Length: 259
Ligand SMILES: *[C@@H]1O[C@H](CO)[C@@H](O)[C@H](O)[C@H]1NC(C)=O
Ligand SMILES: *[C@@H]1O[C@H](CO)[C@@H](O)[C@H](O)[C@H]1NC(C)=O
Ligand SMILES: *[C@@H]1O[C@H](CO)[C@@H](O)[C@H](O)[C@H]1NC(C)=O
Image 1 (cartoon, rainbow, N blue to C red):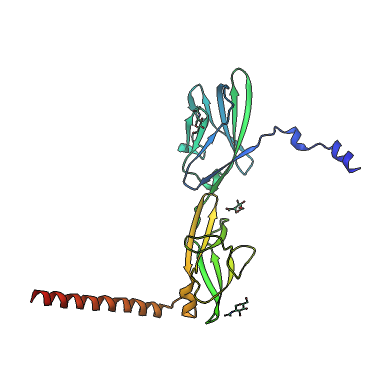
Image 2 (tube, helix red, strand yellow):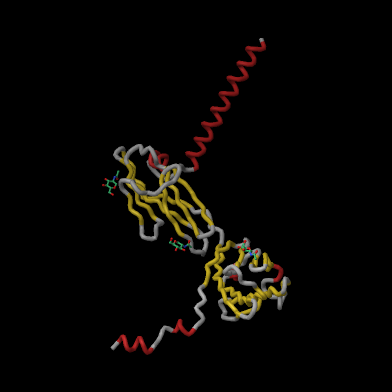
């Protein structure tokens, strides 16, 4: 039967050295530390570091031997970006996207054992600032229905989520909302004059996060899209007019005081 088949075909993993990859995350331009994990009492004689890129080619990166740091090929793509941090850790600086891959440490331990440890390095780009677009606005005295869409430029993968309020918290108790499965588009149905109508879109990856907030009440009250350039001109104009009037009053007061 099937079980017999399974038994005669053991898990191929059993034939390979079961080296678990430790996940290490870095950000473009930043640095990471690959630290070998050793049980206490073990004395390291030598560590050989290698890198396996996507192409499948493994290159020898560095050797820690008797307190020395050696680079078999100092003109490889890492050039000056590798450093010995301490006896058991390698530092990679000014990270590039192509540094993603598997790093292996072959550790020779006194007197005569060898251990292998692997690191899976992920390099993330900084997350772009997201943008909120509002559409399908329908606002009456009975409430405001609106669709908010969070857009993130760039080709890298980011996670998008919505928060409400200030400080931002989960959408949780919001009476009526619908979220598309990708988490980017939020359909809202708000009561008139909601006290708490700040909506924040958060874009993140494991190394970075950017937020943008929208004060929905002003959009709902304007009864249409976000203020148009003409509206802005009117607002700014009013502001300047206000300042001017204040200045005139001030000058008049000073004038009177001096007299
Ligand atoms: C090297 O540095 C790492 C990270 O700070 C630390 O965990 C480790 O214990 C250090 N090893 C030695 C031999 O000092
Ligand atoms: C908003 O949408 C809900 C259904 O999602 C509807 O019942 C309600 O009448 C709408 N309100 C307005 C002001 O359009
Ligand atoms: C997105 O979130 C999931 C679940 O929390 C996580 O496993 C994944 O790594 C995240 N991806 C990015 C690009 O942040």
